[in-house]
Amino acid sequence: MNCWKSINLTKQYGMHRIMILSLFTMLLSFITIYTVISIAISESKLYDKHILWFLLGILFIYPAHKVLHFLPLLNQMKKVKVSTGFASFIPYVKVRLIEPVSKSIFIIALLTPFVVITTLLSVCAYTYFHYAHYFTILLSLHMGLCVSDFIYVKNILGSPNQCYVEENEEGYEILVSKD
Image (cartoon, rainbow, N blue to C red):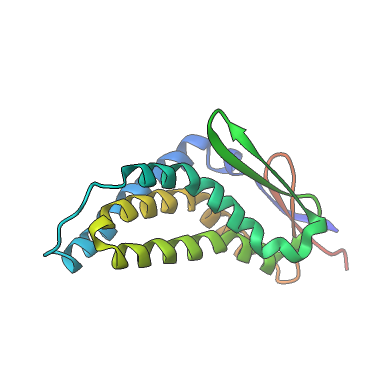
């Protein structure tokens, strides 16, 4: 296999640019989603009870995001290495590809957290409208986390159909067969 393209977000975009883009995404998504939800539930009151659950949601949204990246790769366990632990008191999950996977599976793995968590938090905000502000904040935080995933998807979508994606220390490589 030959390397068709290497994707290193830090080299291509810079960590500061990605963080600023992520913060803008969080802010714009909060403004947009909260405006829509506040129009839909204009006559109800918002409650500030259960702040502890909200703070736990903030702590666990990133590990949940990483676990959802892993779910589409379950049938390819030999190609994935997963490690978990705590950094200080914050849980973390690391998912690392140790062998190449197909382009389609990798794109599904990148988009799964966005689809699942966005759907779940949107339904919760609509169902438990008294706590819609909590769910909106969590949803916008998650949208900011998904920015790097969307950048990877954008780069991978332009690659050949029958390619594979492999992870290395700096990022990802898109591999094509030699024929």
